[in-house]
Image 1 (cartoon, helix red, strand yellow):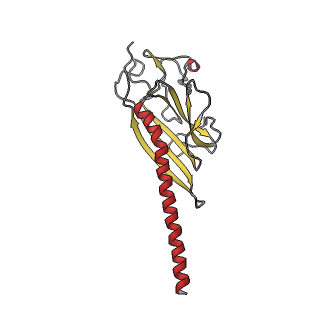
Image 2 (tube, rainbow, N blue to C red; image 1 turned 90 degrees about the vertical axis):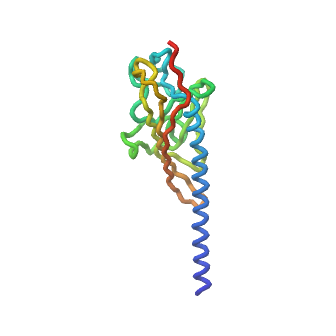
Image 3 (cartoon, rainbow, N blue to C red; image 1 turned 180 degrees about the vertical axis):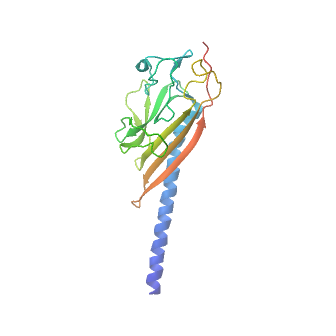
Length: 206
């Protein structure tokens, strides 16, 4: 009886240790995955689709893969909550990070609060670059994304007359809910939240 009890306790402890180690590795993988997105925001600049102080119109004439804004001159480039984010990277290339379906196609259904900002058809974080054919799904195979939200402040380019000339560095708050499948077969949610400010942002010369 004592031997059976010790064996059961050993197996239980071993299972707990394996789960803890798998969760630790999954959390580290999540951090490595998000690090690329944070680096692109911090080292680049938010893409407000502005040329010489004026928002480019019509929307589909701009080169950004995010295809914003949808309004005319003076309109907000971003909504109060977004599931897509335009970045100009350090090479001057326009990038779009967005909430995608499992095949990488864009999810255009969003909610109104962080808790409801999700869709059952989502599952990926996608990167699309201007001038480059194809897309890149960023999350590893053992990760799916259930919720994704970007809160961009300000919603207009702050260095233009339409944005109010409130010369301060734009920032992005990121909210992500991951679902990771552990080697043990369990599915565990991991929540991630951070706010990143851009370090490069130039006042238009005209």
